[in-house]
Amino acid sequence: MTISSSLNAGVAGLSSNASRLAAISDNIANSATPGYKRVVSDFHSMVISGRGGTYSAGGVRVTHQRLVDERGALVSTSNATDLAVRGRGMLPVGLASEVGVGNGGTQMMLSTTGSFRTDAQGYLTTESGLVLLGWPANPDGTVPSYPRDTSDGLEPVRINVNQLSGEPTTTMSLGVNLPATETEASASGDPQDLSVEYYDNLGRSESLSIQFVPTIPASGSSNEWTVVITDSASGNATVGEYVLTFDDSRTEGGTLASVTTTSGGAYDPATGSVIVNVAGGPMEINIGEIGANDGLTQLSDTFAPLQISKDGSPVGNMTSVEVDANGFVHAFFDTGITQTIFQVPLVDLPNPNGMVALDHQTYIPSPDSGSYFLWDAGDGPTGDIVSFALEESATDVAGELTDMIQTQRAYSSNAKVIQTVDEMLQETTNIKR
Image: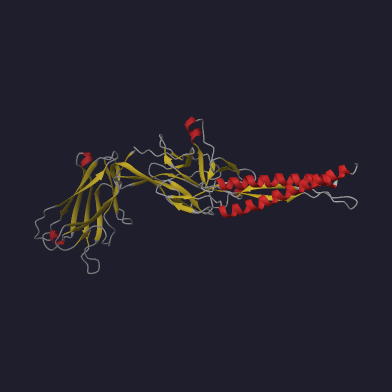
C-alpha cells in the first residue's frame, strides 16, 4: 500500500508539473501579446491518513488562475484609436461577426486594451474581430442617461468618415461701441450699420443686418439709440426692434441704462440677452447687462465692432476621431468644430480574476466575478482611458524562465521517485527467487 501510494504520488507530481509547464509556456508565448494576462499555478497537497504507523502518500493537485487585475505597462502608438485603460476598469467590446449578422444585441465582453480602426462599415474594430461598444450621443452631443447595471444600451461605435456636418447658429454676442457724439443735438443723425453672418439649419450662410439709429434731441445729448434687426433668410423682414438708453454718470458712463422692447423677444436684464425669431428658429443675442461694459457701450466718437462671437458652423467634412480620458468619442471636422458622437464607459467588477477568459484577451462576467457596473471613465473606482496607447503583456519573461527551471527540477525529481519505486518493486519480486 505504501509503495503503491508513492507511485501514485510520483505520477500526480509529474502531471501537476507538466500542467504548470503548460501555463508557463503559454505565458512566454504571449510575452509580446498586448493586454495578455498571465496565468499562475498553485499546488495543493492531498493528505491521506495512515493506519498502524504507516504513511500513505496523497500526492498533489494543481489549480490555475488568470490574473486579470494585473496590468502591463502602457506604450505609446501613433493611432488615435489605440486605447488602453489606466487603472481599474475594462473596455466593453463585442464580436464583429455578431454585428455583421445583426440578430439583435451584441454580447458584451471585456478587455483592457485594443487597437481599433474603422472597418468597411465604419465600426471601430480590431484585427482580431473585436468591435468597441459605447453609448450613442444625441445630435447635440449630449449623452442620454442609460442603465448602468446592464449592457442593453451599448451599441457598436460607428464612425461615418464620409459624414458632412453643419451646426446652426443659435446664440450670438455683440460687443460694439456706439459713438456718444452721434446723440448730440448737433449730430447728423446718420445710422450705423452692422452685418453679422450666421448659419441656418442647413449650414447655409445668412446674415443679420443690425442698424443703430441715434435719437437727435433739440438740445444736449439724448444718449439714446434705436436698434433695428432684420434677417436675410426672412426676406429682410424686421425680427426685432429695441430702444437703448445709455448712462452718462461718472461711475457708469457709457454702459446700458435701460432697454425698451418695441418688437421681437423681450430684453432679459438677468442675462443681458434678447431672443429674436429668424427663419430657422429662435436666436439668442447677448447685448450686455445693465451697467456692464461687456456688450453694447456708448463712448467717445467712434463706431467700433469690438468683439462679435457666435456659435454654429458651415458644412464640413470629418477629418479625424479621438477618444478622451473620460471615454467621449469626438469627431473633428475641417471647419474647426468638434462633435461628441459616443461615450465609452468602463466596466468594473468586484473580482475581475473570477471572470471567464476567452480568445483575444477578452473576458465575460461570471458568478465568481460578481455583478458589474458601467462607470464613466475617471469616475468612481475606475481609472481613465488613454488613447494613442496599448497595454503590454503582463508576462515577466525572466520570472517565467525561473519558474520553468523550478518546474523542470520538480518534474525530474518526481520521475526519480517513480524510478525508485520501480526498482523497489523489482527487488520485492526478486525475493521469491
